Length: 62
Image (cartoon, rainbow, N blue to C red):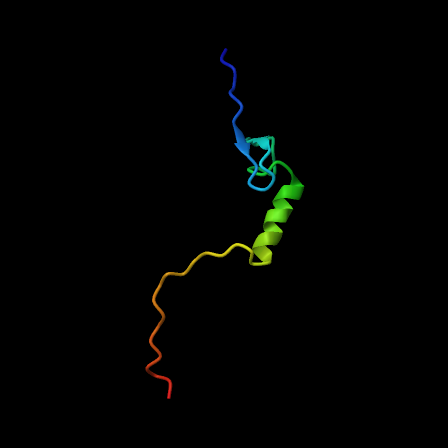
């Protein structure tokens, strides 16, 4: 019988190692606290996705 290898990942918030499996409901975070901190950063618009598209022409405005 082969042993199941535990996959560890670095928590995006606190940088601790945490198990990435179904037994960790907060994955890839280590805890609910770290997950909620990240959610709060998104809600406060601390993370943004850059828009590199050119601005639209406003020819129809008079």
